[in-house]
Image (cartoon, rainbow over all chains, first blue to last red; front, side, top):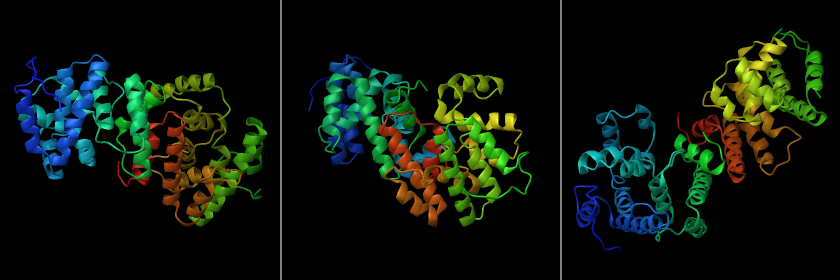
Length: 200
Length: 200
C-alpha cells in the first residue's frame, strides 16, 4: 500500500480521510481491489506522466458506488435528471456513469478529469485522455486480478497504454458476448476507436 | 435451383428477368452464393410462414450492390442525401444500407418490407420482422457456407428463428472482434436485443 499525502487540494479530504470514507462504503474484498487499482494506477501514472494524485483519487473512488442498490441508482438517475436511457442499464454501467454524479454531490468533488475517469472506467469511450486510460487499464490489471488474459494485459500496459486499452476492450467484449451480457454503446465506441482504427 | 414465377406483382420484373439482372451485376461466385441464399430463404419462409415471393426477391437482391466501388457508394450517399455518418463505414455496411436506395431507384422496386430486409441484412436491428430475420439468417446458413459455426446455425434455424438470429449475431461479433474489424452500432443493437435480452 502506498503512503503519501495529497498536496494539490483537488478534493476536500486528505488521502487518509478518503481511504476511510471509501473503506466504510464497500466490502473488505472490494476495498482490497480498490487499493490494488490505486497501486496499478499510480504505477501507470508514473510511466505515462499523468498526475499521480489524480490517478490515486480516481482509483480510490472508481467503485465508491458499486454496492448501491438498483433502487438507489434509479432514484439518482431521476434526482440528477440524467438521461432516462440509463434506466435500461444495470449496476455495471451505473456505478460509473451515475456514480460520478453521486460522488460529486456527496463528497463535494468537482475535478472534471477525475469525475470523467470514474464515469467511463467501465466502458471507455472514443475520447479518453491519459487519466481515463490509466484508470480503465489499472482496473483491469491490478494485482488481485487473475483471469487468463491479465498477464498479457500487464505486459502490454507496461509498454503501450493505447494498446492496453485496445487489448482490454477486445478481451472484455469477447467475455461479455460469450456470457450473453448486454454491451453498452460506449464500449463498442471504444472498440471501434482503439481496436478497429475507426475514428467514430 | 428453384423454378417458379412471381404472382404478386411486387416488382416490375419476372423472376427470370430478376435472375438475369442480378447475374449480370455480380461475379459467378457471388451469383452462386445469392442462389444459395434464395434457396435457404425460401425454406425458412415456408417454415416460418413468410411470403415466399418476398423472401425470394429480397434474397436475390441482397448482394446486388456488393461489387460497386467505394467511390460509387460515397457518391450514392451524397446523391440520395443519406446520413453523412455512413461515409465512415465500408462496403460491408454500404451494400445493404446504401444498396437499398440504389435498388429502389435503379430497379424501380418499392416494397418497403423487401427494401428493409436488404437494408439491414448485414447488421440486423432491434426491430426485425419475420422477412428481415429470414434474409439475415439465410445469408449466414446457405448451402455454400462452410465455416465452423454453420452447422449449429442451420440446426437452430430449423427450430427457432429468433435463436438463429441470436446465434448468428454472437458468432459474427466474436469473429469481427478477433479480426479487429469495425462493428456497426446496429449490430450491437441486434446483439443487445436478441442475445442479451435487453429491449434497447
